[in-house]
Each structure stands twice: as C-alpha cells, then as structure tokens.
Image (cartoon, rainbow, N blue to C red; front, side, top):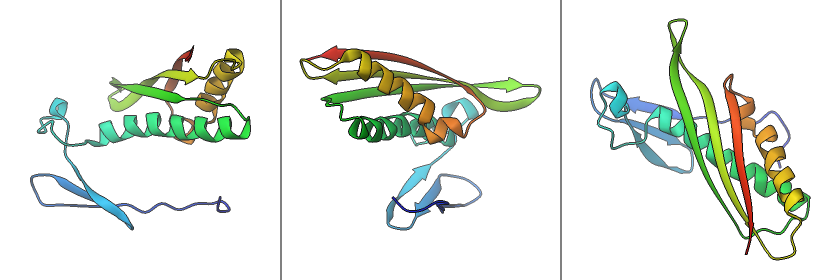
Length: 144
C-alpha cells in the first residue's frame, strides 16, 4: 500500500442537457445522470447510486483485507446497501445507510470470529467513516 495521503482525481464533463461523463486516468469512462426521483432518465448511474455503491464496495474490500490479515477463510460475500436520502433542516442529504451482508464460510470456520470481522469491517470502512450518516450492519454468516 502507498503511504498516506492518497489523492484521487475524477473529472466530470457535460453539456447543458443529457448525461454526464465521469473519467479518471486508466479507467473506462462512466455515464451518469440524475436519478428518476430528480427527473432524470433512471437508466444511468447517478451520484446517489454511486455513493451507495461505494458503501457496499468499500465494505467488501475492507472485509477482504481484514479477513486476510485475520487468516479467516471464506467462500463468498454478498452485500447490498441502502441509502436514505431526506431533507434535514432544508438540506438534502443522506441520513442513513444499511448494509446487508451475507458471508459464506467453509465447514469448521469459527462463525463468531467471522461475524466479528464483518462488524470490524463496517467500523473500519473508509467510505462510511467519511460520511455524517448513521450506518447499520445486518450480518449473516452461513457455513457451506
């Protein structure tokens, strides 16, 4: 891992109407638009979708690193995230995120340890730690 601080640069380009093109060096461009709730087309990634996707993605990447460090063997991790966008004192913002995680582990795995590592991942996720919203984790561990 590189030493801190890390810097991430993204560019957004748009005309007066239509989609926005997001670019970053070495990454395929991504089309973005307002979500249907804000009169957008609803068929492109929106900033709201991308933020919630970042929560789910970061949770899995954080778990992957923590599990590796803790020598926990696991088979798969399904993660869905839900973000609640609301008005707070005339300001539109995300007020809460819920992470639903289903971890599958091999026979003989310490499921209590696995659950604790899921909880540690939620607490260590840099995306959720960067947000003002509350975060709730619903974790399930199954043995296969």
